[in-house]
Every structure is written in structure tokens, then in C-alpha cells.
Image (tube, rainbow, N blue to C red; front, side, top):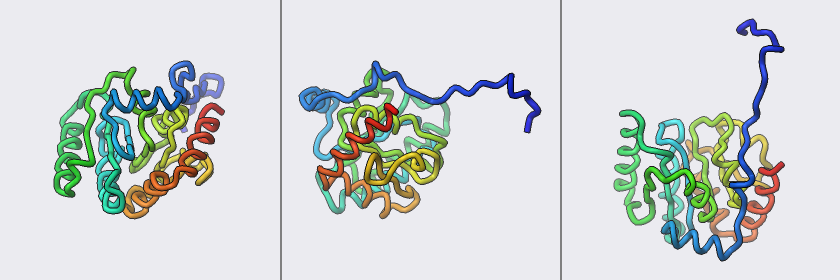
Length: 207
């Protein structure tokens, strides 16, 4: 399309540092949950507060989750401080949506978490959700898998095509709150499924 010679181009694939991102044992995970304030059946999502990332869609789906399991808790970990008016608006809208849906006790916003803490949030949760409206890949989900945390990812992007449903991950349409909510519930309600996703997901991420 741009007339650039192939010998002028080099592809650097996405990846993660496996000396920093890896699973931890049950005792360490319990300690992280206590340190970071995780309770109940903990779901986490992580990224910048932009509309594409679909936090509002996840909050709507989480109302469906809470209606069926009151022990469910959602932590939205914001990557850095808002950089512009649009990102501030996204956060305000999500906070208002949380109040409107009566989810104040079930949804919390973790703002400007230090970079070194992000991986601990991924380890502490029972499930990571990538609810993006569109996501070319979704490295946050890959990092969660590498931490041994089960994942639910969006069907609007590339990552779900690389996963085997029910084997190393689950995927759902974030534009369908019922679909996303019930997919989240599958992992929270079925420990054997969660264990299989955690084990196989970590192997897939490393591969």
C-alpha cells in the first residue's frame, strides 16, 4: 500500500517478560488478595480509560453477574492517570453507570496503580475480563493468562481466534450483556473449569 521495500521492514511480535510475569502459589496469592483488597469472587479488568476498552459494557454485564451471584466483585484497574478530557469522561460515565445500576458495593475503581503492582492485580483475581469494543490482540489478557488467571476475552478482535473455548480461555460478545455476564459466571461457578483455564492459559501464553 505504501510502496515500502520489504527489506526495509521488520516485524517485532508482541510479548511479555516471563521473568516478571508468572503464576504464584496459593499462599502468595492469598497474601496479594489481602494486600490489594480483593474479596469474594474477584473479577479484574485492566487498561486505559478509553471508550474502546469497553469498561461500560463490562459494568452492564456485571449487573447480570451480581443478580445471580452476590459474592461477585469487579475491580477496574486504570492504567495511569487520565491523559485527556475524553478519558476523564469515560471514568465519570462508568462511575455514574455503576451507581445507576446499584453496583457500588460490587464494583471498585483502582486508579493509577503503580506498574509493578499491575501484575499482582492480575494474580490476585479469580478471573480477568477483556471487554473491548475492538482489540487487535489484548496483551493485558495474555499477561493475565501468563499469571495463571483464567480469562474471558472479546470476540471483537484477534486474541479469541488464538484460544480454544473452554480449554485455555473463554470469549463472549461484550455488546451482549447477558452473553458476557453468563460467560463470566461459568468461571466463577465452576472451579474445575477455572482450574483448567488457568493451567492451559498459562501454557498457551508461554508458547
